[in-house]
Length: 153
Length: 153
DNA sequence: TCATATTGTATGTATATACATCTATTGTGC
DNA sequence: GCACAATAGATGTATATACATACAATATGA
Image 1 (cartoon, chains in turn orange, green, brown, red):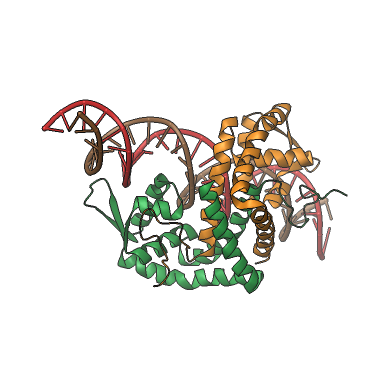
Image 2 (cartoon, chains in turn orange, blue, purple, yellow; image 1 turned 45 degrees about the vertical axis):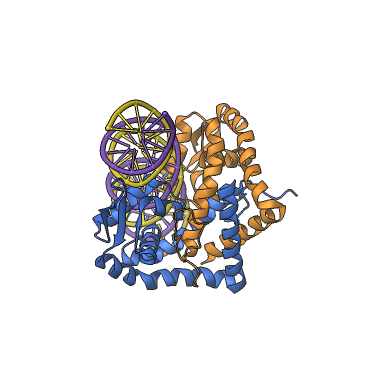
């Protein structure tokens, strides 16, 4: 009568993986799929959309600051920001500290974001509808607390 | 007095991103780092460890079944299982349905898993310690509910 | 000021991830 | 049995991700 550690049959409902990290990564894949499905209609994906959103909010930022904000390795951002630049959605210039690069969104980036906005909203709605308002709120709190805990750990 | 949508200063505490998916992906990165840091001492990472764990639990499975269980694209598993095979940790054979491949762990894989076990446990402890027992339990429930919702959405 | 440490970013490399597409095999309807 | 649809994996391609390392610029201490 033990609860299955793994799906016994192809069609089984989702099973609980023994590892917290694996469960989280699986969730991340599932949710990412929802957002990417919607956003692909606008020609980008959630990571890039998120970066544009951040740049829209702060105006200008260097890679280090974005790295900290997204808890993303700085070298990862080198590549991602490079892609955004290639698309013409962001622009970079040297800062007073000449090691750094300051990134800001371009007009094209702004238009791209505006175009993608409703698709992003649609993704949020899709997920929220299934979670319900309570689940949605709980998700935000839990994810926030876990992120803080994970940063401390 | 508006709450900042993005870190105003490099040293700021974690800020809430407007996008649920981005928050989740950030969390995934943060938690993955903990597990990979520990597991790298044993020469693998959390994804591969998770696959070995699954194979240990089920004995033998084809790619499709693993794909469903991990909510991971089947073609992703082609590569990951290939790596595990290259390491000699898994072995594959043709099934009765000759399109499929049945994967099972080898003795070397079993030993590798045993060696990695305590590092994985250490990672779980690190996270759990910061979350507390209540937070840990809440995490499991929330992640589970969200995954189900995400699969439906 | 100069030697050294630190820091911001870039590059090389490797894995993780998914989609479009292809091939081989199996299933289905007639 | 045969034509065609469906399915299991593999491959091509592209992005996401991190670590080790390299480089250039800045900060620091004597």
